[in-house]
Amino acid sequence: MYHWGAIVAAPGYTDPSVFGADGNPYGTSVTIDQNGKMIEDVQAAVKNQAKRTVQVASWVKQANQ
Image 1 (cartoon, helix red, strand yellow):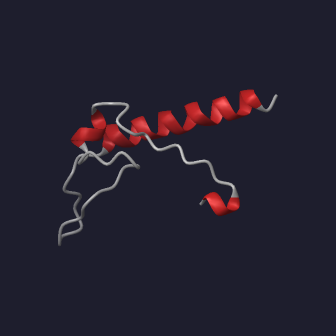
Image 2: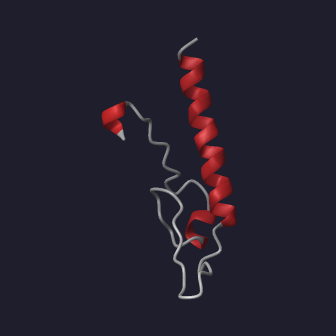
Image 3: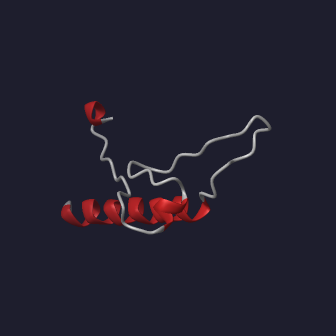
């Protein structure tokens, strides 16, 4: 992603929800069982990651004004 200028806004360990979603500091991931159902409850982690992405985008926008 860096090759084409992307900014990575990984959530890291910024919120306890990350641990509830299997503790991936690079971004939310999920395991699917044989029936296509998610094993981990990732809804809170996804919301935290979205909030973090918007926060980082806001910082970038403010720096470019």
